[in-house]
Length: 276
Image 1 (spheres, one colour):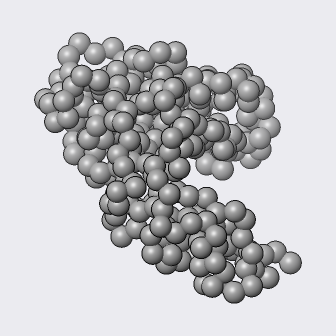
Image 2 (cartoon, helix red, strand yellow):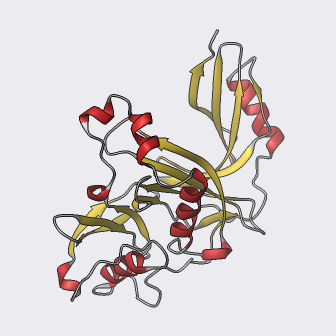
Image 3 (spheres, one colour):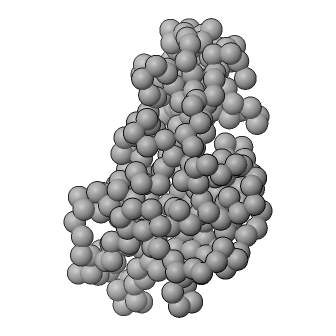
């Protein structure tokens, strides 16, 4: 990792004060998550021994995870994954999600219009309230909403809100951490949560500037035109690197390129044919 990629101030976690690896720390972080603030499911547990624990494997950005299964009311349960910093990266309560009957599935949009009790604005507010109370770092991190939509192409159905982290003051780029919150549109309850908490950030100008990155992209894809490059962090071959992200198109394709901010090596990340 280059010197201009530094570790951000550790955000802490919902299990603040518990050392990583301490006995029970993941369980306690899990329970804090389930009991924090508005919309908390608040399971009724007498002891931590009621929480089943197993070792999980996250992606390179997450590292090793501890997966926990928490009994809820009746036959339902909550599944929670906690990273090495005791930050929750996923929560699943799909057992409690809205399911449509076979008849309702014939016209799901009409069925949901009749059963949904909350406006999109209220569901979006609930999603932000839920993740704001549980995401490490609090007001020191900046987020923008990038998606809000009803997902009804499967059963159960949910309303999904996605947030993307922005670079804080004093940093040029952060890893594109995301938080995704899924809500039951009938009950307003959160039925799943996904998050990433990569802590590194870029604080100094990299060796390859935006102009050089654009030239590298144009050399790789002659005839393409790109929007202004955006500096980001990405995992490449298991290592975290600063890269320029270039979005553009040539006469036949939409393109997303990444250009290494140290070597100027360019690669195509995504390409889609243009519609005629």
